[in-house]
Image (cartoon, rainbow, N blue to C red; front, side, top):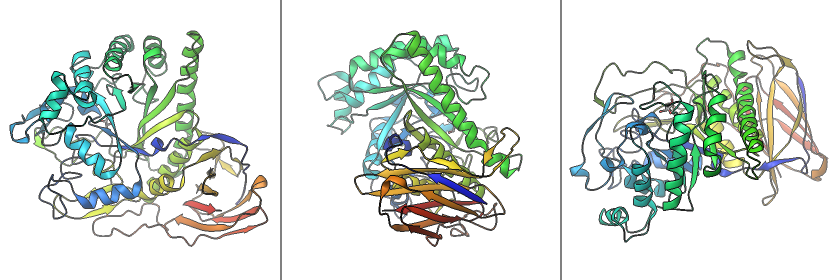
Amino acid sequence: LQSKMLIDKDFQIAEVDPRVYGSFIEHLGRAVYGGIYDPGHPTADAQGFRQDAIEAIKALNVPIVRYPGGNFVSGYNWEDGVGPVAERKRRLELAWWTIETNAVGTNEFADWAKLVGTEVMMAVNLGTRGIDAARNLVEYCNHPSGTYWSDLRVSHGYKDPHKFKTWCLGNEMDGPWQIGAMTAHEYGRIANETAKAMKWVDKDIELVACGSSSSGMSTFADWEATVLDLTYDNVDYLSLHQYYNNNKDNTYDFLATSLDLDQFIDSVASICDFVQAKKRSKKKLMLSLDEWNVWNSIGTSRMEERWQIAPPEFEDVYTHEDALAVGCYLITILKHADRVKMACLAQLINTIAPIMTENNGAIWLQTTYYPFLHASNFGRGTVLRSITNSPKYDSKEFTDVPYLEAISVHDEENGTITIFAVNRHLDESMELNVDLRSFGETTFVEHIVLESNDIKATNTKQNPHNVLPHNGGHTTVDQGKVQAVLNKASWNVIRLK
Ligand code: AHR
C-alpha cells in the first residue's frame, strides 16, 4: 500500500487544549474502591490511595479527571461524602444497584487529584436534586470561608478552597436509564437556572451542558438544539458521549467507527453554530467529549446481583484492535482541536479502563493505555491540517474508509513534529511518504510502533507485557521528505525535530 501526507506549518487547525487528554473516574465498579483507593494495599498512602495506580496515571499526563459520575451522580447526595469518614452514611446506590460506603468523597478526590497533578471536572446531580444542592456544592468547594458551606469545608480540614473550575450540569439526562431523566425542555430549563446560580456563587467556573448520550439516541440533534436554545448564554461547553464496540466481530467495520465519531463531532458543532446564528450571539460554543472509549461489555451489567460494595463491573479486557480503535479516536479528536476542548477517556481505572488492578494486588496496563500515553505526551502543540491520500475500503456504515488514519502536531516551542498514524489494513504494510514542505531541515527522533500478529492479543495479569510498544519503526528523513513504513494493523508515532 502506498500513502501520502502533506504537512505545512501554516495549515493550522488549532492549538491542542491539553484537556483533550482528560479521563474519568466514577463511583462505579472498582474504579474508586480497589482502583485508586485500596487502604490495605502495600503501596497505599495514609489516606488509602494506591501509589502504584498514581504512578501509572501520572505517566499518562492526564490534565483533568471527571468525577464522581456518570450515572452515579444523578442519585448522589454530595453531603454524604464529606466530613469524618467514620460518620458517613452507607446508601443504596440506584444507578448501579450497589451499596455506596462514601469512604471516598469530594475532599478525598481533591487530595488524590493533587497527588496525580490533575484538575477535577466536577459533576452536579440534576437527577434527584437541583439548584440548591448544586449551588451549595460550589460554595462548599470554591468559596474561601465565612459562610455556612465554606466554613463547613474548613471544619472538615480543608482550609483552602478547591477552586474546581469545570462543572458538568448533570449527566446523560436524555437517557431513560438515568435517575431523573428529562425531556430536552425540562433539562434545558433546570440546567439554565442551575448554571445561573452556580455562576453567581463563583463567577470563575465553566459549565458543561449535557448533550446526547450518544449519536444513536432517538432524540439526538433535537435534544442539542432545544437544550442550547434554553442555556446558550449561561454555559460554556456542550457534552458528547460516545462508545463503540466490536461485538459483531468485524475489525474493518470496527476500525471505521472513528468516521462516525468524526461525523458526530461535526454534527454537534453545526447545531451549536445553528443556535449561535439564531441568537445572533458572538459566542461560539466549544465541545466536551467527556465520555469516549471502546466498551465491548456495554449492556452486560451485573446489576441483578444487587447491593454489593464495589463489585467488578465492565472490566473489559482490551485487545490490540481496541488499541487501534482508540488510536483512531485520538486522531479524530485532534482533527477537531478547534472545537473539542475537553475529552475524557472513560474511564481511567478498572471500569472500561486502560489501567487494571487487583484488589490488594497487582496492577497492569491494557493495550489501550499506549496510544493514549503517546498522544497525551507527544500530542501537545498545534494540530496541523494534514492532507492525506491513501487506498480506501468500504465498511458496513461507510464508503471510502482510508486505510491510513493520520494527523500531525507541531510543537513550536520544542521544535518537534509528531505524526500519529494508524494503518487499518490487517494484512498489508503501508509506505507513508510525508512532504514536510515549509519545515526546512528536519531530523528523525524516533518511530514508536504498537503492533501484534494477533489482532485479539491482550495484556492480562498473567501476561502483562504481551502487547507493548517498541521504537524500532522504520522511518527515514531526507531533505524535507519522510518515508515511513506502517506495519499492518499498527499504531505509529513518528517524532521529528
Ligand atoms: O462510563 C460508564 C457510564 O456510561 C456512565 O456512568 C454513563 O454516563 C454512561 O452511560
